[in-house]
Image (cartoon, rainbow, N blue to C red; front, side):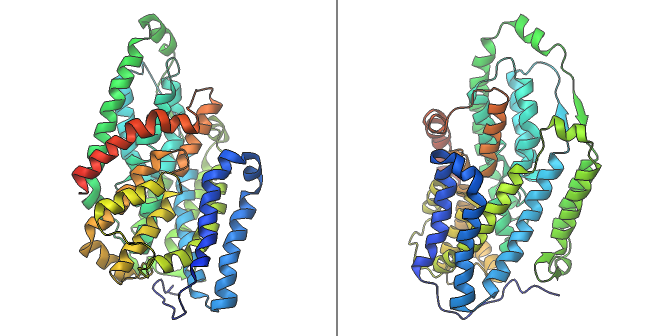
Length: 438
């Protein structure tokens, strides 16, 4: 059975009020963890699903059109298959490190993380590398170690492939070719990562110089390189292979929702989980909490953003035209809202001004060719500025939670912005935008 991803509907454009559930959900994601953490922790699934059902009810009972819901279900399953499988597989690999964490070793480690993020996603790379990062720097780790890890590994690094960061994978699902981001964004990626690594190296050199040599040697004397769970590299290869299956196979679905690649990814995740030894999962403190949260929240996001995307692609809601405007507009929202729906919202708006539909693979491919500067700006803005706060991208809070549990002083939400993202990250991203986008 072929899923008609490009199915269109002749129903009337939704009223502006139907954007309210989408806006409300994003505000809840951004603000509830800060001001009502206990309530949010226990009730976020109900809130996300309830808001999603409001939108679903509108299309079923008012529009009497199932096509948008069917399309959203297909995309949601594909999205969760990739994110979930990479999370489970990376959670089955345990790394221990050896030797003195010199500034150069740390810088190379972050560079490796930036590259690896494009193969196992920013979430997978963050979960795989954050614990070794804390251990290798345990005798001198400070808040800036955690923050720069978030900057580079959890966000900016994942800009070269759709696997790297959720916004880019949503673009891939809509029709952007797999290699488009690498071809068009590698120079901006290289510049941003290089500047961040240089700044980190300067900070880390000063930090390293404060530690007496005797202390460094004593603290690292018993460390050694150690890898466990390497069978998961096989399952990782299966996931990557699923992304590159022939188009005719990718379009084959079960019940019009479960594509062949997503079924392969789910199978690889199950195989990884049951072939990984329990002690490896215990060493990584592995649990399904983070991916469960992503799953519930994105049920709401994928449903509530249907009318928002339709309104945005009509060209009536957003009136910005230059790549720099898209770069900073997408970035500003990505820093405080979830960067995946932000990416898709501005893509829909930009395509709408060209009288193209984000629901059409052919239109998206045409837009990527004819309006590459706009798509570059939206892609870079969503990925890079996701590091602007703890709530800009999913891995950010996960890294902070692991750091807090390890008794590392990670900066508070406001301190993160006041001491790091605004005075350090923002000027770097302005420079990158001015050189690469303008």
